[in-house]
Amino acid sequence: MMTTDLTKSELYIHIPFCVKKCLYCDFLSFPADEKTKERYIEALCDELMYIGCERAENPLRSVFIGGGTPSVLSAEHIVRVMDTVKERFTLEEDAEITIECNPGTLEEEKLKAYKECGINRLSLGLQSSHEKELKTLGRIHTYEDFVSCIRMAENADFDNINVDLMSGLPGQTASSFEETLRKVCTLSDCIKHISAYSLIVEEETPFGQMYEDGQLNLPDEDEDREMYHMTTRILSEYGFERYEISNYARPGFECRHNIGYWTGVDYYAAGLDAASFYGHCRYSNTPDMEEYLKDPISAPSLIEKLDQSGLMSEYMILGLRLTSGVSVSGFEKRFKTGIFDVYGKEIDRFIQDGLLDHAGDNIKLSEKGLDLANFVMRAFI
Ligand code: SF4
Image (cartoon, rainbow, N blue to C red; front, top):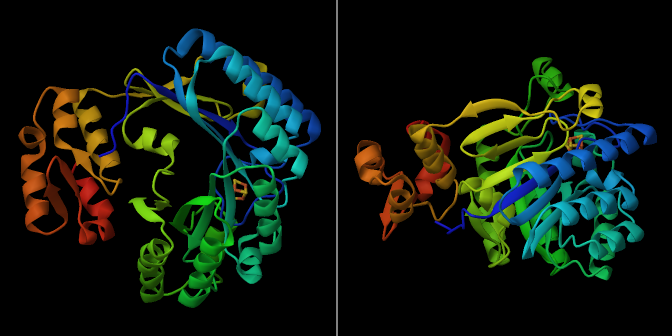
C-alpha cells in the first residue's frame, strides 16, 4: 500500500458550473450567468479564508479544483481562488495542484494564468475520441477541440495531464473504444494519467429516462467485459500502469490527491455541496445555492462520525481499491490491533477463493478479485 503522511491534509474546491448538462451526468453542476459566478467566487473565497484560519491545521499536500467544469470560469476567478488558498493555507513545497477542465472551455490565456498561480496538473474530460459517441453523451466538444487543448497545454508547459475516458457507452464497440485508448496514449508525452470509468446509468438523468424507454443502445455484457479487460492490457502497452480499480498512470504520476482519499488522509472541502472528512468525521456543505451564497461559512452538516470499527472498515474498503492493497503493518500501527484479529475470517476465505492475495506486508485484490471488487469489499463493511 502506498504510504501516506497523516499529518498532511488535502483541499477540494467545488465549482458547480458547466456550459451545458451532459445527458448522463448526475453531479451537482449547471449553467450559470456571469453574476452568479461572480457571487459564487466571492462566497467561495470567504469560505476558504474561514477554513484556512479556523479548521485546517496541517499543511496541504494537494489541492483539487473540481466540478462541474472549473475552466468555464474566467482566469481571474481561478487566480482569486488560488490567491486565497496561498494566503490562508500552508502548502507543501511540492503540493500537487489540479484543475479539472473540459475541451471547449480552455484558452491559452487561461492556461497561462493557471500556470502562473501554481496549478501544476490538468485533468481533461474527453470520454471518447469518436464524434458520434461524444454527441450521444451530450458533450459540448469534439475530439479536435481536445487535441487543441493538449497542444495549448503543452505550449503552456503543463507536463502532468490526466484524461478521463468512459467505456460502456451507447453505440460504442470494443474496437471503437480500443481506438480511443490508442489515440490518447500516443497523442502527447504530457499525458501521464488516465482515468477510465464504465458508464453508470443514473435514474435521475436523461440517460435514465432513455434507458427506461428502451432507447439506450448499450453494449451487451460480453462487449462491456471486453472493453473493461482491454483497458488494462492496452494502457500497459503504452506504459500506463493500473494503480487503482479505474486509474492508470506512468510511474511516479499517480494522482496524489486521490491516493489521499483512498488512504485516509484528512481533506477539507469548500463550495456548494462539498464533502469533507477530518477528525474522523464526514461533513457536507449545503447543496442549496442561495443558502450557500448567503452564508458560506456556516458550519457544514455532520454526516457521520466514524468510530474505530468504521475507520477500520473504511481503511479496508478504500485501501483495497489500490492495486498495492492494504498494509498489514500500517493497519496495526494505525489501529493498535492486528488486521487478522479483526478480519482474519474474511481475509482467509477470500484468499482460499482466489480473490485476495497476501504477499509480504500487503493484502490485495487478485486479478479475479479486481473483477469482483464490490463483492469483496461488501464483506468489510
Ligand atoms: S461536463 Fe462533467 S460535470 Fe459538467 S455536465 Fe458534463 S459530466 Fe457533468
